[in-house]
Length: 122
Image (cartoon, rainbow, N blue to C red):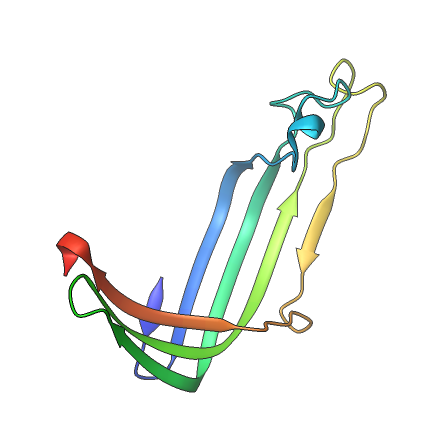
């Protein structure tokens, strides 16, 4: 991760995160067609780039928290894939699924980077 608050820029990159589990709901997790533990995806890459300076804000509660923040915009590149499956895990063989998010079409309503101190880390 690279952060430059003076320029209002930051970059977060993640590659090859082996497995992401999310079945969205308990009922979906317990469905016999894809029982808990069989729904997974591989996060192949994630890159978030924050840039620009909309507003600068500072906040403190005077006791346990203080922070300096920059409101800006963010572009997100994401590639996620699910593996192909075969019986007995699914009733019939299924191809995997691949999703790619294009940062040129990503819209962010709010993005912010900052530095904060709280509690024992004050």
